[in-house]
Amino acid sequence: MTSRRKFVKRLGGTALAGLAIGGIRTAGGRTEKLEATASPPKDPRAYGQRSRFVTSGRLGRSSTAFPSLSPLQDSEGIITPAALHFTVGVPGSGPWEIDPQKQRLMIHGMVGRPLIFTMDELKRLPSVSRIHFLECAGNSYLRLPFRQNPVTVQHTHGMTGCSEWTGVLLSVLLREAGVQKAASWVVAEGSDPDKHWRSIPVEKAMDDVLVAYAQNGEPVRPEQGYPLRLVVPGWEGNINVKWLRRIKAVDQPYMTRQETTKYADVRPDGKGRWFNFEMAAKSVITFPSGGQQLPGRGFYEIRGLAWSGRGTVRKVEVSTDGGRTWTDAELQSPVLRIAHTRFRFAWKWDGQEALLQSRCTDDLGDTQPTMDEFAKLWGVSKDYWLSTSNFIHHCNAIQPWKVTADGRVRNAIFS
Ligand SMILES: Nc1nc2c(c(=O)[nH]1)N[C@H]1C(S)=C(S)[C@@H](COP(=O)(O)O)O[C@H]1N2
Ligand SMILES: [Mo]
Image 1 (cartoon, rainbow, N blue to C red):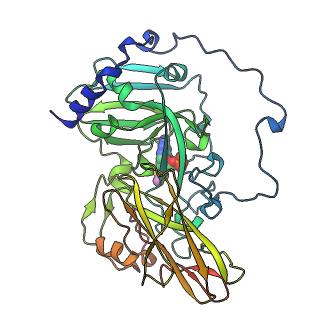
Image 2: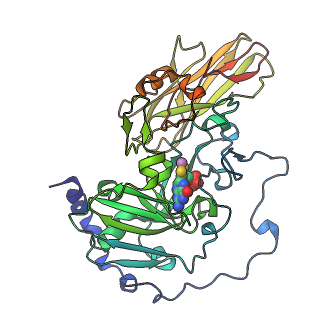
Image 3: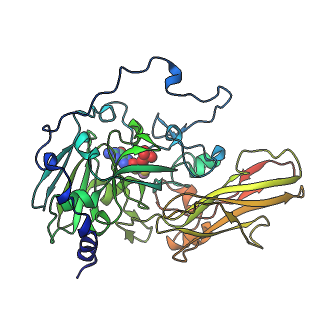
């Protein structure tokens, strides 16, 4: 029996047959709308704002006018506020102004019963809430202009965030549609005018993929895919299709533009890695970090984030002496599977130059490489990143921050 069939069998007991969902079996529009909420609140305090003394915000990349990098240097705990979540692929107008009443999700292709869901119909189904990180495969050193002179942790690592996502498991929808045994992939499509779609192996689709309508307790934000997005836990950001409208069960990957060009990384020797889905074990110190200034010697709590797309963070080690010695940091609970994990490390700065680094190991035993080791994997020297406009995604190299004797903290990755 294939693992997928085993999985289907395991979930068999929770099939929807017994639930009162007759109304969603056919094309949408038949279900009554849920009662509308009262007229929109006029008092600005009805939807709270932060203190005017708090100014931390997202920062734009060169390739988009939209502020897109998350200010990790100001982050605490493990949840990224939706308003500060990094964002990639936001068009200037159009699909992210989707009217939820008009939104439909179609499940079709190699299924017994093609289905079309309205938002209200989706919200009637059994739901789950899961805390997962998202990370763009291009996070860390790969995008101009920041890779030439990345100063802060927002520049270097700002394309990751962690949220509590609420929605319906894709497996529930696929089973309801009667996905056929021969279907080995699904293709997920967003509503973008220039078509964003990605192929996902059915094993993953039937495992932990979420069709999410809420983020951190409220509807998913427009920039994050309102009203509906895919959350594909631990897999490169690009496959987490936003403004989701269609899932097609198929028997082969569709080799879409995104998966055959941008996200198929090619080494200088011509070898490439297609369908490199999982985000590897990674960590970064967020305090003290690049661009900050330490007022003087004495006690500092080193804080940072660690994550792995393959599982759970098992340990984070910190070195304050240029990598000569490494000591386990404290992991703050909860330590969740495929979620940001906060680590802390007590440090007494003696006022001398110091090099701060963190190194993550996940529960599969994967350990974060140095930049030299990572470059070797790709058959290049680390200067490659400075001398070419090529992209290599999935960079999970250790990030060194140098504290100089005057207390300034700067990025030491290329020195
Ligand atoms: N429909 C659609 N989905 C998309 C994209 C897009 O351009 N269109 N960008 C992808 C990329 S490259 C990333 S990294 C993630 C980012 O998700 P976020 O904007 O919620 O952080 O969305 C992915 N999903
Ligand atoms: Mo991305």
